[in-house]
Image (cartoon, rainbow, N blue to C red; front, side):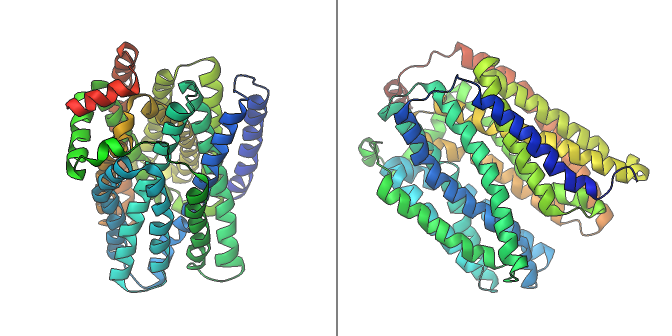
Length: 459
């Protein structure tokens, strides 16, 4: 054996050292602003956002185990997972329109309530109760990935009128913090579920106070400077479909939407695909997950360095896709049945490729957050952001159905390999689309937000 179990124990230490080096490099870099009002706005955004992501991370890894402990088979578990993604797909656009029509503060407050309901339903073994819980979870996920960002971008650009380039600092730090809290949440969940032996259900109970804390903080500390009055005379359905029409009519936004939808579909596919690939080594999954999150944090720091000195955001999008495509292509080759006789070595190399892929995800999150902030009109920001997630959720549902239909270990690995082949081809398409996007983005004359809203109304 070329590598042994210690490899997975040493990997987090190596990655932490690398992350520390990047943090020191950022600390010595004077390009980030020290504007006090900007820092206050960041903190006001980060506190509820990190509470929300912490609550999401702490219980996420135990969803499958809770379903298993209740005695459900793979197909029923897959159905429950699909219900969550389908709920996000169906209700996401409605949630976005409600946010744009009645305000982002309100919808972000509802996140904590909806996700708390989702967590509390896990205490019932009844299938339909769990199914309803997944529906609420899907709604909450839509809010997390659209409402919070929409509130912040409006505050940043239209109330405080900070430079648009400063969005990079916030989204890079949000990605870094999310990775950090994911690691911390993993340790805390392990303590409650395993060390204290409260069982796999305990992280869901722990998550609820953090979720309610998110809603309480937003209620008392956030202001609603977005003016939804202009949208109140418009029917919810009209608002939804006018936003969709605008999405298709703007080539720059549409191209970014294709890249985002496919990339994030692959990102969710990766979540379900990495465990079967590494199963042959029986690695400590908690340590592997920690390695992924540290890699994500490193990626966010690389983005901060590159964006401040070397690359424009539209160029960084291409760099991100280069890294992702290369990593997934390597994984595709290594999971081929032709390498079965070298399975131990190829699996370890897959782990390294997984880390590089997570680095690319760490770069992807802030760059797309910035680009969305630039080109999505304020009046329909949350709605359009959720429209972009519809294809993502469809891709994830189809992948889950495909993988879960393969019960035998050998056929499941072949299915995983086929999934990675498709992922590689899709990433190549995304890479090509980033060059198209860069051309459109550079050519586009960015008008004021009011002009964008006029164009949206005209559509």
